[in-house]
Length: 327
Image (cartoon, rainbow, N blue to C red):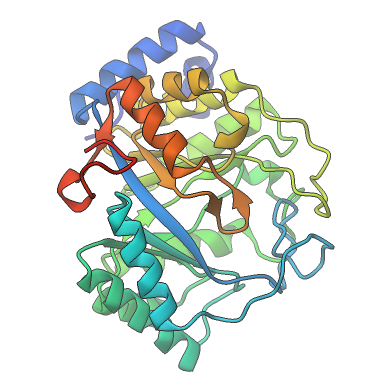
């Protein structure tokens, strides 16, 4: 189903600039028309290969170009990954995401190991997601055959601001990878990062680019920058909570069918701000105390917050009853 406004930057700018409570009210109505407002899809993210990435993404402590306190780790064994996936399932996750700090996927033994990881996680009854960098069509096909449900590849920001953040790959490179993912029949997880020094117009531009994809992404992570010491963005101030809320609300209105994922940066958000984001249409979070290499609210904190808000894990039968996450 198409969104209820014209997909032009001008129309999206007008939507983004509406009085905040009016915007949240409309987004909440769209959310309830397409989703159960009491359900939150819970995922867990594991860094399966950490650090030493050759890219220069200014926000990322895993870049080999920056002096961030991230210890390099080679690609994990299949056994360690599956043990982590079992733990995630016990804690209430229904999607398990695996991230490797690669510029691009390369054919060979390591990619074959990732395929084995995907097959193993799928056999546990979990949805599978990976983020591995740029991808060729035949590699997307292999991932699909292994049982991959989602491939994450973010646009990060607007095309106009993109060059201020990354120079080692182009916006077009990202779009080509998304094309390969869709052609293979894999669901797309695609979003961006707010608070990197971009303007409000750039946030509008990112939302425009996400919404005009055809088909639209099935999963849209909205991240707030985690400013890590040693990266070029270490001194960026925290994103104002109302800008995060506006982005979530506009994403829900523009991409009504998607899971809108409240992702990185939740540790700097108050419980009240997160509650407003859930009201405005966010219906997916990451569990655990770490997202790749940056902090995330702990399981007990998230469980208590969801309980207070009357929210529950989307697939409660996969969670352990009596655990931290309500089912």
